Picture 1 (cartoon, rainbow, N blue to C red):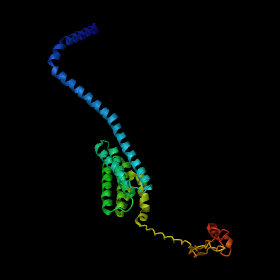
Picture 2: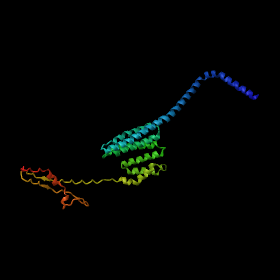
Picture 3: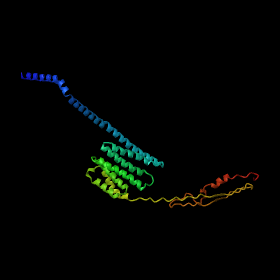
Length: 297
C-alpha cells in the first residue's frame, strides 16, 4: 500500500506541475529567454573556436609553407642568375618581409618564431649572394634587421627549447657578420652551457663554431695570377715574282725567330736539326705562285 500511495502522490504532483506550466512560463518568460540566449551564445562560441582551430590554423600553416617555398625558389633563382652574370639577390627581400608580416599577424607563437628565424636567414643570405663588395652601412643596417628578427624569435619561442636555441645561434652569426667575435663567442658559450639545449641542432652548431672561430677571424687574401706572356706571330715576307723572266724565281721567305719561353721540364716535339719536321709552309706558298707560260709571259 505504501508504494502504491507514493506512486499516486508522484502522479498527482506531475499532473499539478503540468497544469501550472503555462502560468509558470508566463511568469518566468524573461528568465527563459535569457537562458536560451546564453545557450545560443555558448554554442556559437564553441563553433567559432572549433572553426578557428580546424580551418584558420590550417590556412595559416598553408600560408607559411608557401612563404618557405618562395624563399627556397628565390635562392635557386639567384644562383642560376649568377651563372649568367646577373644579380637577382634582391628578390630574397620580398619573402623576408612577408615572413616578418606573417609573424606579426599569426596567433601561433611557434609558427611566428620559426617565421622570424627564416626572416633573419633570408636577410643574411641576401647579403652573401650579392656580387662584389658591400658597403659598411648596408651590411650594418641589414644585419641589425636580422638581429631584430632573431630577438623576436627568442621571445616567441620561450616554451620551445629547439627554436629558442636556433634563434640565439642566429644572433651569434649576426655578431660574426659584424666582426664582433667576442660577443658571438659569449652567445655560443651560453648555448653550449644551457642544459635545456642539450641535443638540439643549435647546440652542436655552437660547439663547432667555438672550435673553428679562430679560422673565421683570419682574412684570406688571394695572390693575383700572373698574366700569360703573349706569343709573337712569325713574320712572313714575300718578294714579288717577275713573270717576264724565262724561269720564275722562287719567292724569298724570311721567318723572324719566334720568342717562345719554354717552361722547365717541357720538351719540344720538333728537332731543330731535322728539317723534315718543319711545317710545309714553303710548299703552300709555291702552290699559290702562277707558273710562267711557254712564251715567258
